Length: 161
Ligand SMILES: CC(C)(COP(=O)(O)OP(=O)(O)OC[C@H]1O[C@@H](n2cnc3c(N)ncnc32)[C@H](O)[C@@H]1OP(=O)(O)O)[C@@H](O)C(=O)NCCC(=O)NCCS
Image (cartoon, rainbow, N blue to C red; front, side, top):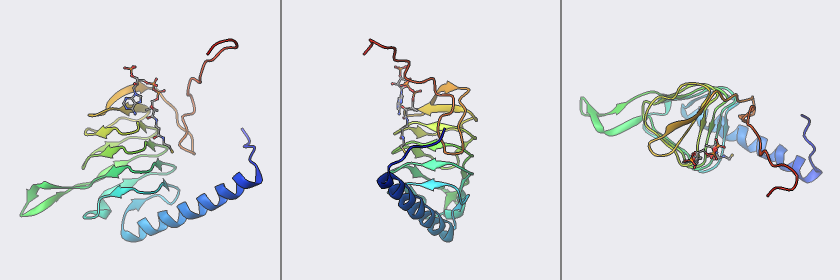
């Protein structure tokens, strides 16, 4: 569906897209393995010891205050913290304040609910939420803007609510 935006919203969208592409390039410069289309919101807490261990696929959106880890200080290997790969697939939405633990692999078209703590791998096409995160819905379809394509909708009929 075509978006109907006021000139003010068009300008805002243009500036947001510009800022997000600069932010994405800056993170990739630091070594994070992010597809150039990944949208990264503000105030992210991304692992600063093992940049190369974080992989994020095409058309995924990471919302503000999410944390993604790729090392573990308490688990030592030859005196060094454990370094692992943490990956998020394509067309995913990582909700506000979600926490992705080191070594977790998240499939494609997944929604991680706001504030979820993801401790285990997540299959494609599902929603996980809570602490520890559990699957609350399966069979979801996400689009290239990381939107829930087959969302059932509000189902509000006239005269209700
Ligand atoms: C995860 C999410 C998509 C779930 O949507 P939904 O499938 O419509 O969920 P529902 O409202 O039907 O809730 C289903 C159950 O999951 C629970 N739930 C929903 N979101 C939850 C969350 N973030 N954390 C914990 N539990 C959650 C509900 O309480 C409900 O529990 P119940 O069955 O015991 O009553 C949504 O709540 C969410 O967190 N979206 C992300 C928002 C966000 O961060 N956006 C980024 C802005 S760019």
